[in-house]
Image 1 (cartoon, rainbow, N blue to C red):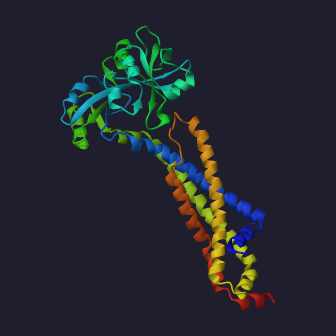
Image 2: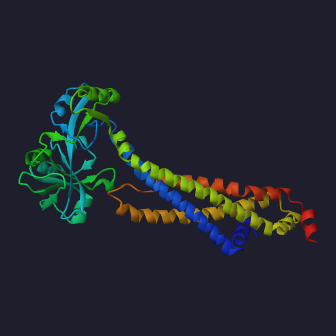
Image 3: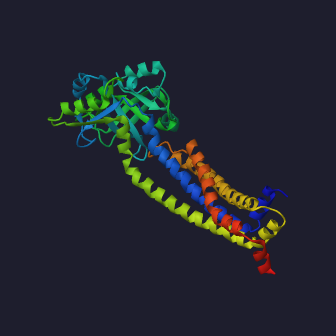
Length: 386
């Protein structure tokens, strides 16, 4: 009988104890993997955005608008290649339960600057030439069955048109796919020029501007120059990189992630105590057998290796089922929270961390039993039994 057969039989000697310990390990790695998926959602969009795109908004609040003529003034600053702009429309389809992310954007420059939105050129040109045209994400088009040419009414709880109603009539002119993430295919865009002429109030104002900085320019210096230009105006600005803006937008989730992280640390600490106790109890029950094996010529190294492999097998089995359960759970939950927190997924690096944790935990859990086996003397153990 080789060492692997011994590990297998000893592991299942107490089936109830082994199952409960594996269940504890599975829950711990399930929580750890869920946390990794949430952290991926909080950080993935940040790392993928263009580092040369800035976002200029009102200094006090993003809800306050800026004059449209800021575009020309910012364009004159050295180091700025181009400037686009957008306004938040909000919007919903049919009823308020179908909330949508709808933006009014500069139809001349927006999609040239945000080239991650991919669509056929003829559709983009059609949208530019259609006053009431919409650019719709593929996920939204699939959800509502929209096709190019469909007439779509969208309502807003913020903006009323000149006819005195909150429902605006649009035509689907283009459908885009996102080159980096399918979870970002849930936005809708229409022409800011149409929005500006048709809204009942707030004309010639935008929610934010997006300057694109030349690669050789100093991003921080350009940001400071933009804010300095409008420092003494009623519409003072705050300019940051797009990455910083997204980090600030998800800042509200950091405390939640920290709480989950602390919970997982507590769970793992408890897990180590449980597995250590299991291994020490199992080792005490087989102490006479270990002494007999030493008497038959098995070395202490062999017995310690056997204990380590038992710990590793128990932890690896629980970690495997925990990761699989988390993967299935995130696959389901990510669809439900795609609008609220897109990008929930387990990165491949996480599995390397899991493997490292299993090896480390197995070493810690088998340390005390290994020390006992190292100090084990045949005469004292078998003599005391006799």
